[in-house]
Length: 183
Image 1 (cartoon, helix red, strand yellow):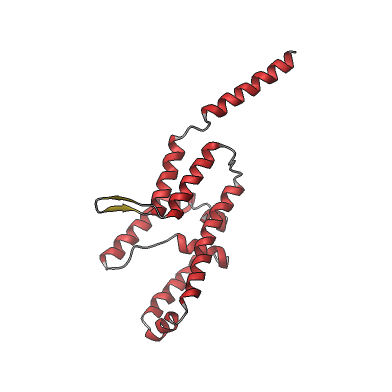
Image 2 (cartoon, one colour):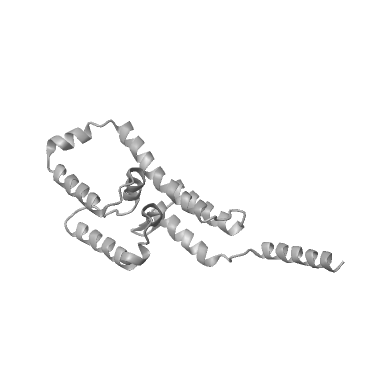
């Protein structure tokens, strides 16, 4: 989604391995100093999509001011005075924008939902992700977004590119064409 929004290829530069390393290190550092896990995609992608501002410097400046303002009680009080329905509406817009951009990528890549495989993978991802399903193994938990992502990757890896029934139908059509040609 980020590649599509910014018209850049972040898989190549800086590379997925560097991005994942940065995410991991930032979460470790946040954990050591008692902060929450860092989020570097979801909310930011929504903001990028809505504002069309893709400058790292602008985002870093916004982060700097957010940290600075967090130490000023009056600014925090102003933010806390925003009614919860407004904050809820902004959240709907923010996360809806993320989902919409994901759907835009599906449309842009002309994914065929007439294929059973694509329909099955998308259905599982949507139901698990939106439905709030989770997997609990002892103290380890995969929440709905993580679980739906993993399920989507597994299904994409496991499911055949073409169902046996689709292959049989295609072979039947080919035989009919051959017979019409020879007749």
